[in-house]
Image 1 (cartoon, one colour):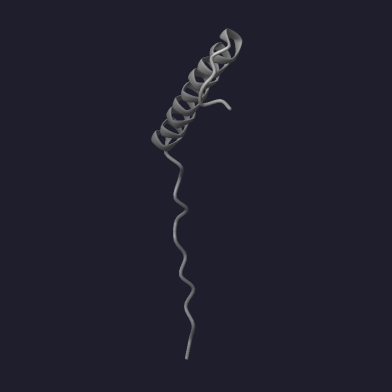
Image 2 (cartoon, helix red, strand yellow):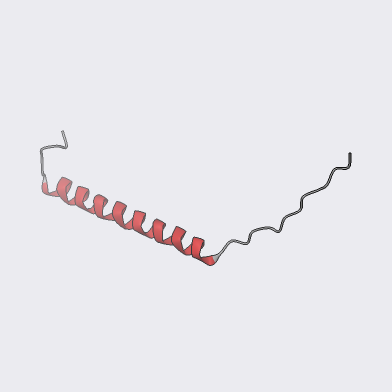
Length: 52
């Protein structure tokens, strides 16, 4: 029984997936930066409560 090889064309990465990856990275970086800024301001001003 002969065996046939299945050859398919490689799928090229589209620029839209790269843009969405960059958009997700930017949104995560902004969210993390805002959280870090709020935490830093709370620690500097001496806010106590849920920290301890």
